[in-house]
Image (tube, rainbow, N blue to C red):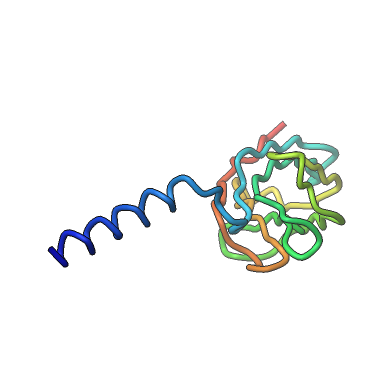
Length: 126
């Protein structure tokens, strides 16, 4: 009888976890686009998803990183986007050597730092 009660409690806890809204975790990159500007300059538009909870926990940046881990640019996000998910922000004037053909876009939040789903993006040549 005790085993059945424990099993029922475990099942109930599992069901409740599925029904509860997810607490804000790490910032996920869901989409990114790059346009080449003059010479080695690029314009990026990046879409993030994060369950912003307010000023204490929100997506606060995204970064453009070379495949070798070199940080190329950071877009700082100045405020929470509680009612605007996912959201897109842009950054222009990112200088990237022509020898780099793809970059990694990663997001960060005010509680966890960098993390979440990253996106590899091939850079346009023209």
